Image (cartoon, rainbow, N blue to C red; front, top):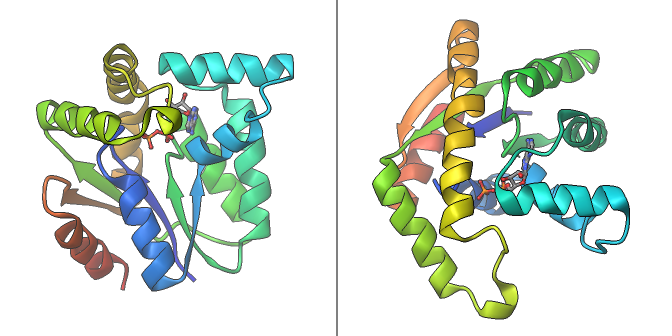
Length: 191
Ligand code: ADP
């Protein structure tokens, strides 16, 4: 069973590719963004409100909260193919993921990094925001949040690429291609 991490800036297509892996290749998608949104959907607790505010501003949610959620899911799905989407987002999370997989005698097989042009990325995110019905629009899809999320990506998440390079499991792909071309590259790497 494969365990893979998809790495890339917000809006690069990680979610789309994860869904294809779920539909076609029998993967379980663990998206910390989705998990956090469902955990805070009632919006009642103080913690829930704090998490929502952080997500809406584009900042990272504290590691202990995210890690707690993901470690439970790893244990639940350890015998399945897992695609991690949006996790890890900083070096500490990458190290914790390794040790929690280690606890169940599993290793990450691949970390796939989506290389992308930041200008085009911004256009894609605006298109996504415009195509979504107002009632469904994610509150973090606005340009101020987007700019902050890209900055957070550069400062916190990019260093993970070097971490996985040292481990010899990184593959870089061109995230600017059509959805099916990106998918073809991913399947070549993981098969
Ligand atoms: P996208 O799919 O557009 O990249 P996500 O849905 O993954 O966005 O994430 C939305 C927000 O959720 C992030 O901006 C951040 O606030 C929070 N978040 C998601 N994953 C993590 C994580 N691993 N660590 C900390 N915060 C996270």
